[in-house]
Image (tube, rainbow, N blue to C red):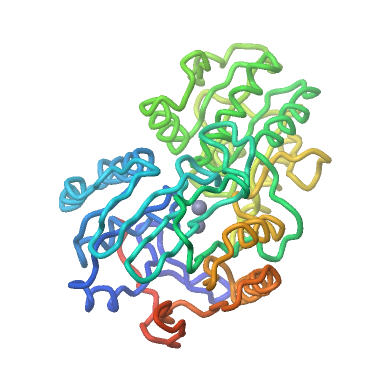
Length: 413
Ligand SMILES: [Zn+2]
Ligand SMILES: [Zn+2]
């Protein structure tokens, strides 16, 4: 831990914060498995640090499993190799029996590949857990989320829906990845200098869109940053990346005219060691960022990173390089991966569960989400905080503060 000038405590670079898992450890005997819905850090990021406290099988689809395997491969701790033998790779739309639960992974669209909802069936109650999702008819890669009328859940009568509240305060419908691709193309087309585009590495559809835009606008694309190289290599290994869509090394594009070059760069959140920050300092070997060039942020400012991002943008502008963010242009150059209010309405009106449990959001998000469900005819809504226990059958009930939810600081795995 270190203290910043405002007295706020932060983890050091070799430390990170994870939830206190005492409750799970104490109930290890009842734990059947770890079920992964998708490969985002807020869903798989703590596995290496915590798995040994309650070792059990880990179920995931091929992409998520591969992201996890590569995390193990990068780890300096050999104990993590035990995780590899416990990964069970699943196919979507097939039933798997996990202890007393029958589970199916149902493909949904989100902002990374192979995001899934979970259809969970028991003899007495059936649950649809959405994971993170949105309705996207044109996700650029992978299957589109079925429209509500096609939302086949294998004729299982869903008693409860457990659902993502991230955008429960946002009206309307989320933006499609296809629309973002068009927006990036429109943004890049008139630019004359080098173009640097930053986005979240796990969004393979976005990486693919940026590669397509480079080709369509007559630019050669080079990738700067290990996070992108890792994701593209996984996408290639699993045949998600078209072979004809080439990526060049920084050295290969270094001597091309500026207007023929596009770089995909890590560091949209102002991370100090990422490519974008190093470029602003002139310390990224073999790549220049100069007056007349442009940086496009195909990303959002994650709350908590504002200071670092503001510093990064000031440093970019100090080099007389233009900065383009989503709210500065008419077209969409970024899209959220979570459902807005109309999408939530569609889901509840189609599935018609008896109970909904709001997850993934602040207290305000969870509460507003519960009002949407009620408006759509869901009779029972359960809203709580981390650590509350929800009973769904035979009577739905919330046990407040059932488990401890402290945070603990661990060395980086
Ligand atoms: Zn996610
Ligand atoms: Zn998430």
